[in-house]
Length: 365
Image (cartoon, rainbow, N blue to C red; front, side, top):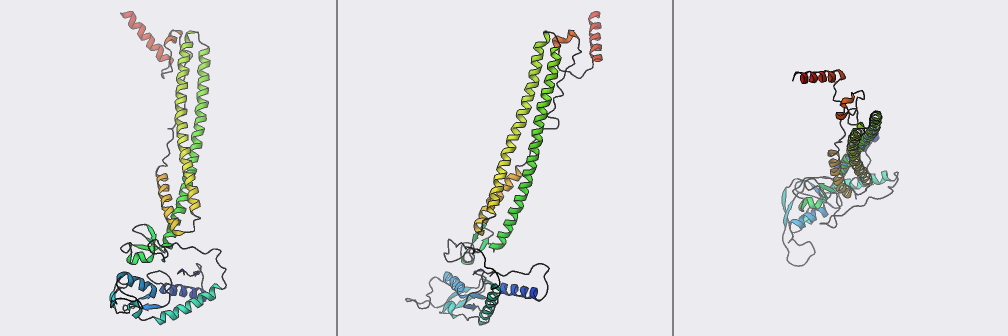
């Protein structure tokens, strides 16, 4: 029986006698939970000398594990008198007589409170609709009869109460499985929201780079046409140079397009991977089994962290699509046609002044 026992705490802001009774029943329920199986005490309930209570079955499991040679009541063979028992709550150790845990006194007060509590819960559950589907419990691999109901924080794996008491997790830190389930489900939900926002950002950048490709194509085409029109007005001697310069433009256009399209393919691949990860995470949100959910959520959260860490988006630098540096001055003198090239930034006046200086130097020598 699950220790939550279907109890629904009062909603925030509730007041009045009903809310007070609900809080009282919730506090009572916490006092009736066995520290070993983490469920409501099952009869009979034994009281230890240190005044802590245990289910007799849980106490017997602990005692049998600590005293493997002890013979239970009714068994034949050699009888071992007594044995040691350590309280799982305060670690106080006592020596039991030959009756073992059957010699411990029953806590009739706790058993009577259990009867009243169950009667109250039965009456309250009559007015509640039954759950459409009962939650299935996974059983421990090491203890076939024990449910997986706690989470080992040290080993990061779901386990059972008996593994914590005297099994391989007895020196580990543990937490209730439900709290780990809620925390990791919240982390996974936050991870999905972050990844979806990152995907939107990547899609926006891809759209900007696609627009950049169109601008590169338009600017390259426009610059090429302008260059071709300029060369078409020149004599045959310019034809060879025209082909060379058009080739330079085409080469840089192809290089830029190749670079940007490579980035687009890369970001498309990243986006597809992220979308697939989001779909896997959304499907995992429907997993009803907390242990399976926690194991799968850990892997997906690690992948989300790696994806978010690798989402540094590379994009072309500002003005990458510009082709304005490919321009010529068609008013140049005919004597410069053999050495024509793209403009270096000098004005006609400066070029003429340099030509005059060169002519003066030739005349001097």
